[in-house]
Each structure stands twice: as structure tokens, then as C-alpha cells.
Amino acid sequence: MSNGYDVIFIGAGPAGYVGAIRSAQLGMQVAVVDNFVFKDGKPALGGTCLNVGCIPSKALLDSSEQYHKVTEHLSAHGITARGVELNVEQMIARKDKVVKDLTGGIRQLFKANKIEWIHGHGKLVDNREVEVTNADGTTERYTAGSVVLAPGSRSIEIGSAPLDGDKIINSDQALDLTAVPPRLGVIGAGVIGLEMGSVWSRLGSEVVLLEAQDELLGPVDRQVVRTAQKSFKDQGLDIRLGCRVTGTEIGSGAEAAVTVNYEDKKGEQQLTVDKLIVAVGRRPNTDNLVSGDVDLLLDERGFINVDEHCRTNLPDVYAIGDVVRGPMLAHKGQEEGVMVAERIAGKAGHVNYETIPWVIYTDPEIAWVGRTEAQLKAAGVPFNIGTFPFAATGRARAMDHSTGMVKLLAHAESDRLLGAHIIGPQASELIAEAVVTMEFAGSAEDLARTMHAHPTLSEAVREAALAVGKRALHKAN
Ligand code: FAD
Ligand code: AMP
Image (tube, rainbow, N blue to C red):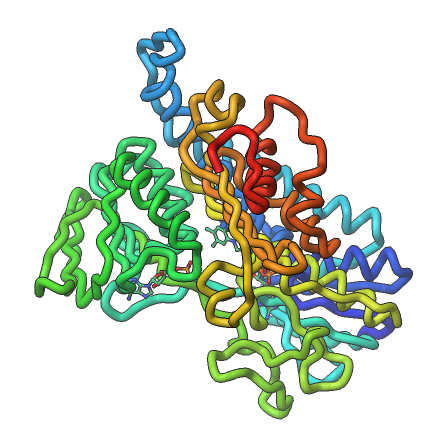
């Protein structure tokens, strides 16, 4: 048995690796146990986010956007491109290099912070003891002052569309297609389904998304969703709502198609595609995470039960990231990692769960933070709304990217910013301004009186803040 760690993290995704770095900064002896193996067969740090999540999906979204720009949008700028060719294998290789460079970067950060990386499957065998099963099946035990569980999540599988890894695939496999499928089906029009659908649609696939709910992106501001739906339709994304997939059949031979049977309001339907991505959500990795005699409390959905400081029911055992309540987002896990490291060090770490930004990297991008109109109405909170369209900003027009708007919700009496909803160019970056304002308990007036560079997209945020007080300068109020 090896002893002497102040803290052991199980899982080296954004929650675990960031928590480990912060713990080391605070002077602790840290080990991280992680079992991830990249497709080249080598262990890699970074978890889902770096290897098969945020980063590779954004790399492919960027590549596909470049292709789409060249093939569809350059002519408006007076530029003619001929002989444009697509090399999907090279696109995937570039994505893999981005991933490798970043996961290698975390390795360097671990070395610089003297964090020990233990490759293997970690299991909590006692409050302060972790058993690691190595690749060769041997086991070793490690003890620590505290243990942080950060094992993340994995794709949900459904019985009506079992994966075969070739024709019916999950999001991990959809990041590694080597050719553009002429017809692509996606089950689930959530964040991941929409992003994957966008990548392959831009590269030329005919994409159909089958969504079980009657409304697209339920928790998102309805005005934003209406704008998104129109844009997605114009791009050729065929999103079918209220569809329940009942079964799938894979034909025979390499070129075989997948038949998807589903039911909608009109009855039984069929869809034929060349590849089918199942993107119906993710579930927490709690299998084989604790030994039978360790009484770790899970909630009714299988997530590890924690309090607002990510403490589990076991003393000195914390859980963070996708495996606990709250949105499955990398930055939320990172903040929890920092918080538990600081708590273990006796400091006052905390996470403000009211200001978690959400982003969907479609075109246009969608980003929001805080409350929606519907939530404020339901809670009986009086509020004012300020909206501003990107079409009324010089920068968005110059970029030829003027679909969308910024919408801000502020308390009717205090003017405190309660929510921001953005659809449009660079929404993923613009949302940060609203997050900072909310973190500082700022008002719409604070934003409205802050000078913004001209011409920038951020002027739309300021104009929306002015619009809360009905004094936007570049639109009629
Ligand atoms: P993970 O990143 O899942 O890491 C957990 C690690 O623990 C893994 O390496 C796993 O192999 C390992 N592990 C599990 N169990 C054990 C064990 N018992 N012993 C040892 N190791 C173990 N989020 C965003 O914020 N922005 C995005 O743009 C975004 N895009 C996404 C795109 C896709 C396609 C997907 C699938 C996800 C995306 N996400 C995005 C979500 C994001 O990836 C997750 O929220 C984030 O990775 C969760 O971090 P984590 O540290 O909790 O877990
Ligand atoms: P997300 O939670 O953002 O990953 O989105 C998952 C999406 O898949 C949600 O919009 C769900 O409504 C949808 N979904 C879940 N199960 C099914 C199913 N069996 N068929 C179609 N859509 C589904």
C-alpha cells in the first residue's frame, strides 16, 4: 500500500484535473487516477471534454464552418473559389492533433505541479482509500486525507437503437467518421445532437434529427429557439419533433442503410439513413466506483448525492463534475474542482450556480445565463426586457452574420441583471459580459453606461441594456 497523498482524484476530466492543479497550488500532495485510453491505445488526460467532447467537437465545427464558408458564402464577398475539395481524413487528423496537443499540455501541467498520474480504474474501498486496477489486472491501494470522485459521464444507449459502432454510433464515434454520410440521422436534438448534425450537414450530409419532445430545446428562451429553428431549417437541418424511435434495422453489406422506425402524431413513420447517431443524453459513471461495503449515497437518477460544497454523505469524500447534479458542462465541473480543493485546504471555496453560462455551438451560436422569462414569470419576479438585433450593429452587418439578437432581463425595481439570452455571431464569447455583470450583482444600467468599442458585436449587449430602459440608440424603442 502506498500512503501519503493529501488528496486523490478519481477522474482526470475538467473537474478532476483542474481540482488537482488547484490542490497542488495550495501545497497538497496530489494523485489523479484515470482510466481513459485514446483511440491510439495510449492513456490520455483530459477526460471526455478534451478527448471526445468539447474540444474535438469544436475542432470539427470549426473545420466544417470553413468548408461551408468557402462553398456557400464567399461569392457574396466577390470571391470565387474553384476546385474546392474536402479531405475528411485530414480534417479528423487535424482534430486529433488539437486533442493530443491539449491532453499533452495537461500532462505538462501535472509535471509542473508535481501531480502524480496513476493510470487505471479507481475504486473507493474506504473513506480515505482507493484501489486502482492497472491495465494488466493487478491492483494497488492508495490512501489520502480526502478523495474526490470525478468520473464523469458517458452516452446513454437506448434499446430501440443499439449501437453497432459502424452504422449506429454515439457521439464519440461520430467524431471519427472518415467519410461524409450522404444521409445522416440523429436521435435527440439536444446540444450534442445539434452540434454533430451541424458538422455533417455543413460537409454535405442530408441530416434528419428525431426529437422526442414536442418543443426544441425546452429550457431555452422561446424567442431564441424560434430564431434558431428558422436558421436551422434554412441550413437544411430537418428537425422532427415529437418523435419516438421504436426500432432500427441495419441492412447487410458495407453500403447497407439503417432503417429507423418511429412514431409521431400522425402515426408510424420510417426513415432511411446511412449513419445514425444516438445523442439522447449522458449518464453518470458510477458503475464499479465504490466497493460493496462503501455506502455512498446516490440520488434517484443515479448521480452522487452532494451538498452545495460537493460533499458526499461520506466524511472526506467529495464528488464533482458530470457525476453530480447540475448541468453537464466542463466549466461547471472545473469550478467545482477549484471549490473542493479550496475547501479541503480549509479555505472558503464556493460555486455560484446562478451564473453558469450555457452555449450551443451551432450557427448561429446560442448562449444564455440566469433566468428565462418563463422562469421569472413562474416565480412572480417583476422584470423588464431589453432586446437588440445584431442586424442593427455595423460589425455584424460587415461580417455578413447578422441573424439573431441579445435579450436581457432585469429586475423591474432594482434593475439587477437576472438573465441574458443571446443568439448570433460569437454568442459564446459575448455571454461572458453578462456572466461578469451578474457575478458582480450588476444592473442593466451598469452595462448601458459601460463604453463598448465600435464597431463590435458587444455593442449589441450594451444596446440591449439600454433597451431595458427603453433608450436603445440604434433602434426604435
Ligand atoms: P469527464 O470529462 O467525463 O472525465 C471523467 C474521466 O474519469 C474520464 O477520463 C473517465 O475515463 C475517467 N473515469 C471514470 N471512471 C473512472 C474510474 N472509476 N477510475 C478511473 N477513471 C475513471 N461541455 C462544455 O462545457 N462545453 C462544450 O462545448 C461541450 N461539448 C461537448 C461535446 C460532446 C460531444 C460531449 C460528449 C460533451 C460535451 N460537453 C461540453 C460536456 C463535457 O465534456 C462534460 O461536461 C465534461 O467533460 C465533464 O467533466 P468531468 O471531469 O466531470 O468528467
Ligand atoms: P441533451 O440532454 O442536450 O444531450 O439532449 C438529449 C436530447 O435527446 C433531449 O432533447 C431529449 O429530449 C432527447 N431524447 C431523449 N431520449 C430520446 C429518444 N428516445 N428519442 C428521441 N429523442 C430523445
